[in-house]
Image 1 (cartoon, helix red, strand yellow):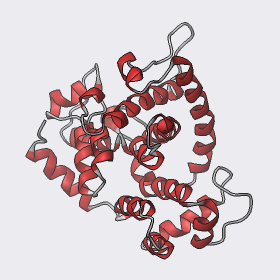
Image 2 (tube, rainbow, N blue to C red):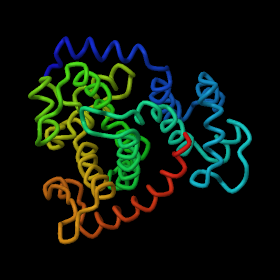
Image 3 (cartoon, one colour):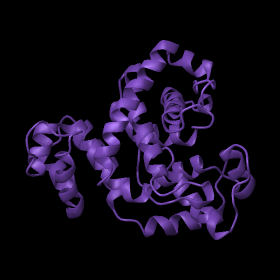
Length: 280
């Protein structure tokens, strides 16, 4: 579905007002994945945002990330934590402030979108071994940013004084704006130069089986969203636990027992990461 000129204009204006932090992440991923990258290039990229660099050192010393001794500088973080942990910290810092805003049109209080993003990112990270390549950084990023479009759609809905109607969120968005937050999120991620392997699963999150080029990552996101929902809104007594679509589970060769094991592992890590991320 094409995004209307009105929505594009609104989104482009919002993007201009944001910091450069989100644009660091795709560049960092490219550097990490290049075997010929000089570690100094990674350090220089992180130092572009001095406030982020300072917060990164602080976050590196939290219980969730700390290697057991004090991290004193960016060089220590890269050396002792490794690229994967550094990437996770930078991704959290780049989007923490944006994702913590309340979304009135969606009925989300301050911090609720952030918690959803954290839980989904961890679920994607734990599900990534189901992929042949085990693309953990890519999977983690998709989970963290899968709902970023909600931030931009919310501003449009609030400006129009258009509360979402009851029923599925994506259907209500289409009814009011002609587009879903998944499609808006994909547009934003392209503007920030994220690769298509991240953009397309976000765009197809409501219809993962329609994602042709990166279908397994889209299916992975579908499962991660089920895990996220079960963690943040546990079913009442007697109600069934949210389960992924059987066809999606089959596409990933994901057994029911394995799904519940990953869910439990994700819930445990989420509790720890939420504490670590509370002061980002």
